[in-house]
Structures are given as structure tokens and as C-alpha cells.
Amino acid sequence: MGWLIPVVEILNRFLDWVCEQILASFDAVLGAITGFLLITPNVTGMPQVQALTGRATWVVDTVFVLAFVTAGILVMISGGDENSRYTVKDLAPRLVVGFVSAHFSQLLCGMAIDVANGLTEALSDPSHGSDGAFVAIKTHVYAASSDKSGLPAMLFAIVALLITVLLAMTAFSLVVRFSTLLVLTAAAPLALACHALPQTDGIARLWWRSYAGCLATPVLQAMMLQAGQWMLLDPQYMKPALGKFLDPGPIFNLFVVMVLLWYTVKIPGLIGRYMSQSGSNTSFLGAAVRVVVVQQLTRAVPGLGRARAVAR
Image (tube, rainbow, N blue to C red; front, top):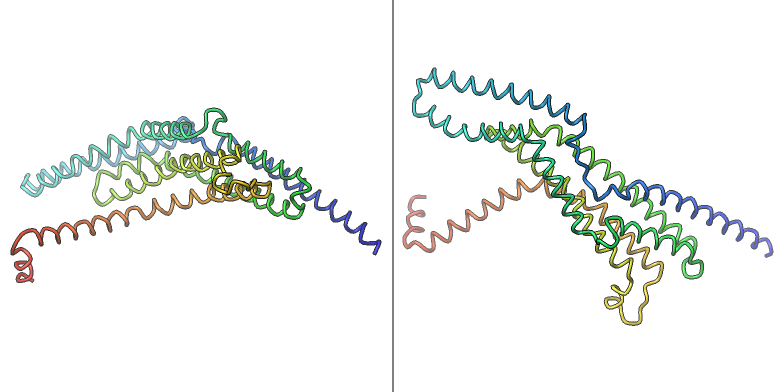
């Protein structure tokens, strides 16, 4: 049985090497997202975005000039009858809103980004800054790696690998959000110009929902990381909830880190799902409200329900 001792030593050295590589990957991914995850860069000042926005504004100007000319020709041909005056009266405010919002789209985008960054900064702890949660995560991961007695090397390697994967997924979502923000900002003039027609107003509303989702993601992630930061930096916050004599150990802290990062990864998907379904939810809610109002009016006005039944 003496041959088991060298095997155990080789296995322990292999696990130590695996843990070192996982920690190196953890440091690399954490360093890539620290300082950037909870900040929305003001992409309106980028030369590429300004060039694309200028071209989009030129397209909007051309289309609106053609639209105004066509509307004038149609009014002249129709002789200015009541239907044509009603159509012009209905579409004129939409055309003005679409034209103005398209030309001031970059100003609106810049103001929205500043508001989102202000909310993110307000939700962060002034004593630790916006990166306090990442500092706490790194502190607990390295504390668990040095605790050889209370945490097996195999379990630490598995948990640290899961944490590194979650950090990599967070970094990937950061790149996706930044790319989406670039495209939405560059296409803002074209999208906001769609307010000009009732048929294309849904495109402009979809742009608003998508842009709001991109800006709301770091705000909600800041709230989640701030809550996790309080638990990780001061375990005394968790003792009243866990029990008077229960002391959170390194494995429990690592589980808190995993749950915290898992929720951080899930936030962009939840916001995207909500933004894509908000239009249908709004229409359904409006229909439900209309049904309730009609029912209440029918019950409140005597004879109204009987009149509707006879009409049917």
C-alpha cells in the first residue's frame, strides 16, 4: 500500500496546479470587467457613431422633404376637401415630432446615458466605490483558496471554476450590451423618425424600449452587486438571518458569490424578455381595463345592460 502515497502527492500537486490556473483565469476575467461593467460609456462622442448618425440624419431629411412635398401635392390635387384637411391635421404633429426627435437624437441619447450613470453611482457605496463588490469577491475567493483545512481542494476547484465561468459570461454580456448600445445610438435618427407615421410608430417605440433596457441593465446590476457587497464585506449582516451561533465559512461565502454572479448574468436576459413583451402586455392590459370599465358602466347605469342585450 506504500504506492498510494506518491499517487496522493501527485494528485494533490495536480489539484494545486489546476487551482492556480483557475485563479489566473479568474484574475484575468475580473480585471477585464472591473471598472467597466457598471458604467455606460457615452458613445455619442465616438467618431464612428457621429459619422453613421450624420448619414442617418441625411436620409431622414431626404425622406421628410419628399414626404412634405408629396403631402402638399396630394392636398393640391384633392382640392383641400375635408378628408385631406383632417389627414394633414392628424399627421402634421407626428411629422414635427419625428423630425425634431430625429435631429436631437444624440442629445437625447447622451442625456439618457448620463442619467443611467448617475443612478448607478448613487446606488454604489461611496466608501468602496462601484468596484467594491468585485474587491469583495476577489477577497473571498483568495481567502477560500488559502484555507486548506476547512475546504477540500477538489471542491474549491469546482466552485472557483463555476465562478470564473460566471465572470466570463458577465464579460460577454458586457460586450453584447456595448455593441447593442452602439447600434441603437447610430440608428437613433432613423428609429425616432418613425414617430411620423402611425404605421411605423411601433418601430420607434421598440427603439425606446431597447435603449431603456440597455441603460437599465447596469443600474439593476449595481443594485444586485451592492446587496452582495454588504453581505460579503461584513458577514455580521448575515448572522441574524442565519442564526445566532452559525458562522458563515469560506464555502458559504463562495456560494454567495456564485448566486450573486448568477443573478448578475441573468439580469440582461430578464430585461430583454420584458422589453420585447412590454408592447403585448400593454395592449393586453389596456384591453382588460376597457372591459372592466365597460362592465362597471353597464352595472352603474340602469337599463344600459338591457339595451346592449336587445341590440345584440
